[in-house]
Length: 160
Ligand SMILES: [Zn+2]
Image (cartoon, rainbow, N blue to C red; front, side, top):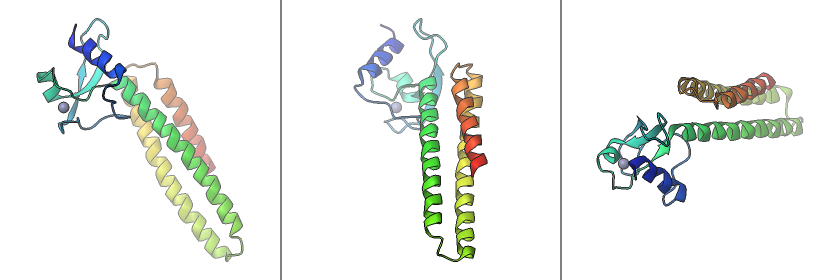
């Protein structure tokens, strides 16, 4: 049995769950690097591992496919996007409920909120665009998903 098929079967049985998204550090504390699989099952598929794991193959180290990690990231951004939209409408309801407060104050509060939201949305938009670049480089079909999310963020942006 090759090393790669051992790891992929080990991770699918879930004896130690990989963290969501792109990992930065291994369980052993070592920095994570990107490697390319050379097996028949997954030729040229990229994966995350630490350098120690590549030398000591019988030890238990973090393993994650790059495409799966990027999909995690996109799902997380999508979730965050939904939360921002929910927060935004909740905040608007709040502002409307506080109409007794002086007009000046309301405007000030609203401007501050909008600034905050704009900052958050801009960061998310940049993250997604960066993901889009990475995925385009890896020539993954999932790049379409990133485009859809960018579009929805741009739409949200327009509504702020
Ligand atoms: Zn490790």
